[in-house]
Length: 556
Image 1 (cartoon, one colour):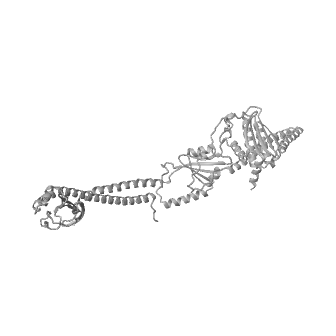
Image 2 (spheres, rainbow, N blue to C red):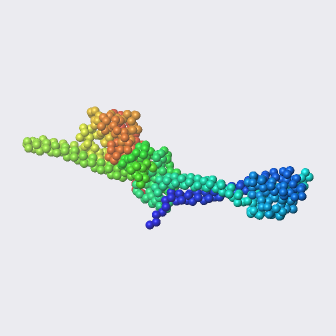
Image 3 (tube, helix red, strand yellow):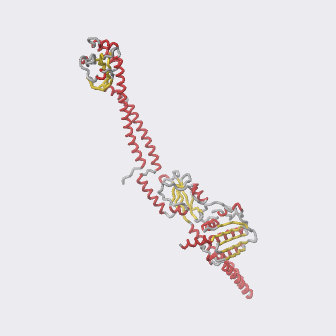
């Protein structure tokens, strides 16, 4: 298979070809300019020498004699040698030569133009004479009246001019080679840079890879976010836009820059993670409506990953909301299981008591004990079912009552209205009520006696109100905002507000319950307030119109 040239190699050879063409052009232009200037300088020199000879009194005096040649020929030959010229021809106005480097040419007609000189104007030309092509100047010799008495032609052959020009060829070639060498070095350096940034791939391969990667970005079910080294958003796919609640943007759209992280309404913990560039594995981050599991790694060049400098950071985002809902339901089942275990343990003790009384022959006392125990159990069940008309919530509260009984906490439940027709889903009720009661039991268990937790549920046409109060230490005013953050936990701290406050904990970490409550309440358009009575009081209010629209959305 033919291996395509990389962008760097193509640019190098294209630039090298351009430098060669440019060098040839510049060298030719320089040589032509040098040649033209050489001819001009030679013409000026010939004109200067011819003018000096024409102004000489010797030439004017000899031109008035009957035979000027014996006087002018030695003079012309001496000047020719001294000035480094090829010829000096002094002639009569009728072209008859009085001097010439070749003795046999004296007396013959001069070959070349003389008409401008006859009119009194000196001129230069390139013409071919007896010595071959030459650069010459012709100047008239005039007397005091301005009458042309003779003509002086001074010249040098073009071969001598060419020799002088050839002496400049090394400088021309040096300039050309300098341009070629410097251009090649620049092309090589630019090629190295492009080879590094394009990983040695050709444009066709890069275009193909871009199409593939763009297709992958749009097709994967996980959110993908690319952040540069400055912490700015570079690229994201459709799933990331949906999970983060940002405008969807085609991955190939380079005309419109993506929004910056500062412009996005991201949870503080998630925004800090994306800006930091640190590696992360399966961290939980709670948005207003979702529970997200985020992993982040540096984006390295595949050719040298072990020693490459990161080009940015890639974050993968998975929607953990449905799984968290299943976890909440599983937690509810665990609560019921714990309640059954506690009841089984308690009934086992009572059964042993009844059996022991019967073995001792005290059947009346055994029957009385069993009857009272049955009445108490039935009374508790009737109270739960009577106060809360939703079976799943009744079962949840019964389980929490058993838990509270084991912890030595008095749990009281007050309900009014019809919770079953409130429009709220069972999952949302379990999430909100279950986590609030769990938090209250933990706070009451850490507090002093008497330990109490009260739950009040009210459902009206205007709103559903859930209030959970405990006898614990309460929440300080300075910690009200922090207590709802993901990862904030007072367990093990002994007082409200103590413990870890590390957002973005791994799946299963502490400090998730109240964050999920806040998320559910925010999604439902309700409010969550934290107050203080004996201990902490958490109050959730969900308006009726929000509940109606939410119920309608669940059935679409």
